[in-house]
Every structure is written in structure tokens, then in C-alpha cells.
Length: 388
Ligand SMILES: Cc1ncc(COP(=O)(O)O)c(C=O)c1O
Image 1: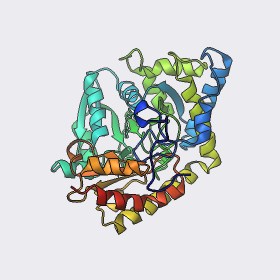
Image 2: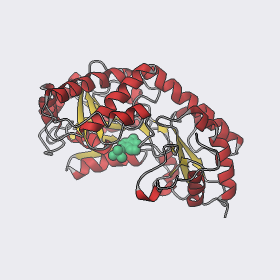
Image 3: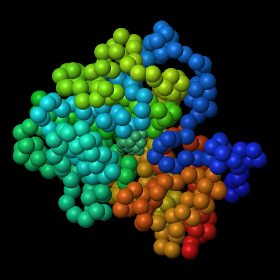
Image 4: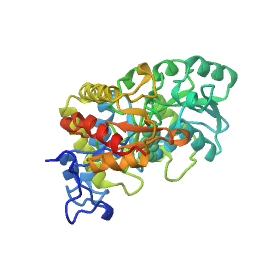
């Protein structure tokens, strides 16, 4: 049992040597803490991915992922790689030759979608909020601005948008944006930090290619990501030219339909995702997981309010998993991080131009409720100790 305020690595289990204490709660936006049964699943054994047992595992994952995200008509493609590999596969596999992508950009991950397009020589247009750096990253995208951009550029083949901008914990209006697309345009959504844990039911959004990852709201291990394609998305990925050997979606589609994977997969991480999905369904699926995340957000944010901490993003567009907090005056982030870590919690710095003034607390993953209840005290003590 974790003893409050007395956290230290037990003898022989030095944090520096790469082993960590099981009691350390990760409050970063993935990789998230996982349950013991998900960790145990990593040890199911060695398996050749050309054997029928892997084919069965792959088939189960390909059936369970769309079901978990309430996209029953979508087809799942599993990728061995981090979330960015799913983003890259989605962008390069959704735009036909001599056509363009329209990227909605109000944070680090919108920016990344844009960089992916440009790195692959795909024409990319950008929609982003006006204003200074802070405003740009704290304002949800206005669907009317997306409409204007679509009117202006008649070569847009795909619109790409981040659902939950993890940079700040902001939710974009993907349902409203999805409704603007023409019959020949596909909607690509980076749902990597929203998969299964944010309120938006992706089934209502008209998403053609949804990017997700195993190790955030689904509580699996890092190393596997995926895209989910609607029938229109499937048609599109079969039409576009191959722009990459490793990340060409059509290659994965052809192989995975036959139970095959084109490249060596992270087999054990697939076991863990399989277990995490069974756990997800047992705990109430989408409804159960989103309810849990709402309750967690309410619990920890009430504590932040009592401590007088200021949350950056407005309430109505705040996600249920990431809270961006203004660093109190005279508190050093590095010291706050270390103080909290000594009490058993890992927090996360702000990104880009927000890093000097803000930090993030994310309630993703398998986290015991009592440890979230104890967070307020740990935070209060750590802030006091981190004043310079
Ligand atoms: C919204 C979003 N997109 C993409 C990524 C990139 O994922 P990865 O770091 O696994 O490549 C992240 C990571 O936090 C994310 O939050």
C-alpha cells in the first residue's frame, strides 16, 4: 500500500535504472498506467505472427476496436508504432495525387498533421484561430472558418482535425466540422487522446479515418496504434498512390483482411491491447469509460479550485482527461514535478510557448480512485515546497 508523503523507490528498484515503483501514478497524457491484468498479458508467451494464433488475435482486435469506439461499420488496421505513425498513415493515405488536405490547427498535434502533409509533399492548407499564441491554442476551431477554407480551395480531398488537443486539453467541434464535407472529401480525425475517454460519440461524427492508440484511454501498452476506416475511407485508401513503404494503408488493408500483417508486429503489445479491451467492455465500454473520466475530472478539478489553481481552457470546451494549469507565482515547474514525484505522482510540462507558465495534469489510464482523492493534499504540499 502506498504510504502518503513517504514515497521512495524500494532498495534495489532504483528509478534511474529503468525500473519503477508500481505505486507511481502517471498523470501525463500517455503512456498511461495499466492494470495488473494488462501488464500480465504481456507475458502470454512468444508467438510467431505467421501462425494461426496471431491471425485469431488480429481478427479479435480488428473486431473489438470499432465496437469499442462505436464505429461498427469501420474497418480497423493495426500499426506497430506510436500514435504519430497512425496520423502519418491516415494523412498520406487519404489524399489522391495532385489533391490537397485541409488541416485544422490549434495545437501541437494539429501542427503535426500539417508537418506530416508537408514532409510528404502533399499540398496542405491550414485553418487556425486568429490571435496571439495563447489564443490560438485555447480557441476551438470555428466550423465557419473551415467552411470558408473549403469554399476557397476546390482541390481539398481530405480534412484533418484533432478531436482532443492534448496540448491544452481542448475539445474541437468535430461533429460540426464533419457535417461540412462534400461527398468526395474524407474526414480524418486524430482521436489519439480521445479514444474511448471523451464524450463525443465518434459514430455521430461522419469520420472516415480515425486515428487511435493503445496506451491512452484504452489503457493498453504503448507500441500499437491503429486507424479505423469507414467504407468511404476504405475506398479512398485503395485509390491513393503509395507514398511510403511502411505506412501505406492499402498494404495493411490487403494483408490484415487475410489475417496477415505486412511487418513484424509488437505481438506482446497486441496481447496487452486485447486484455485492455476485454477490461474496457467489462467496465461498461464507451459509456462506462467516459463516465469514469468525467467523474475523475470533476474530482480533481474541485481540488484544483480549492487550491486556487487557474485552469487555462474554458469549461465548455475542456476535455475530461487533461487539465492545463497555470503555474502559481514563484513556483518552479521542475521543483513541483520532483516534489510530486517524491509523493508518487508524475505530472507533465506544458508544450511549446506554454511550457514556462503552464503544466498539465492528466487523469488517463488505470488509476485507483483513492490516489486521485489524495492528489489534492500532495499537490498542496508540493506547491508549498516548490516555491523559489
Ligand atoms: C492528440 C494526439 N495526437 C498524436 C499524438 C502522438 O502520439 P505519439 O506520441 O504516440 O506518437 C499524441 C500524443 O500525446 C496526441 O495526444
